[in-house]
Image (tube, rainbow, N blue to C red; front, side, top):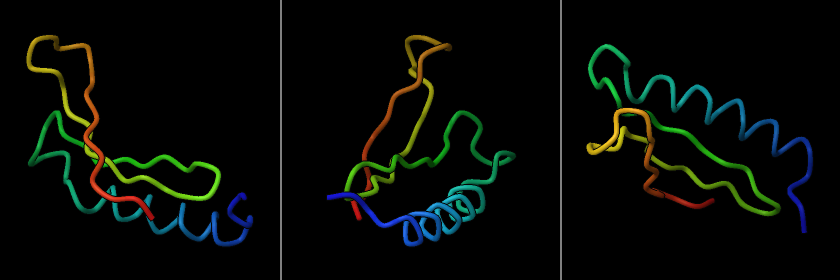
Amino acid sequence: MRLPELPQRQATLLLDKFCHERVPCSRYQGVTLAYCVAANHVTLFEEYLDPLSAEDWLRTPIARF
């Protein structure tokens, strides 16, 4: 089952705003919030730079909707 188009667009708009406002770039460099839309759910996760490699990003899932 796949999320219908309208709720998916609404979730995308809300999560874009939430991720942008929740972690201000000036305060937490190297940490961001992001999300991934799958077939019937959305996963919110934190991305941060790998302490062992300044080029690699690690993801920690926070919530699934």
